[in-house]
Amino acid sequence: QVQLVESGGGLVQPGGSLRLSCAASGNIVRINDMGWYHQAPGNQRDLVATISSGGVTNYADSVKGRFTISRDNAKNTVYLQMNSLKPEDTAVYYCNAYAISSASGVYWGKGTLVTVSS
Image 1 (cartoon, rainbow, N blue to C red):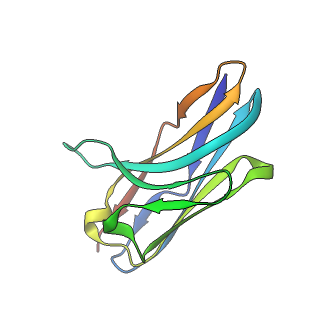
Image 2: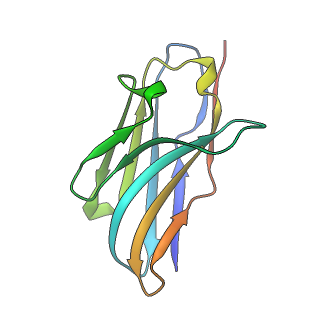
């Protein structure tokens, strides 16, 4: 089994910054794509950003130029640097990863809450 644990969420004022981390652990051979998604109350879970094992990134239009996804393959960790935060960025942020392991597949973390408010 593979576990993903997010950290770094919290309360921040509009215009502020936060950095989220997500560490994968378990019987991992390799992790392919990793990503961040967010879900606001009453809404579906939407893509924020993804990154391949080779570092190719993809962003939702709403976060381009403000958020940066990165990863440390040696640590099986993905990061999301969030700048110029807006109230509409308020949501639970989930990371996911496609892990090659004894039970290969897509795994999700339990989420970390980001609240942007003055």
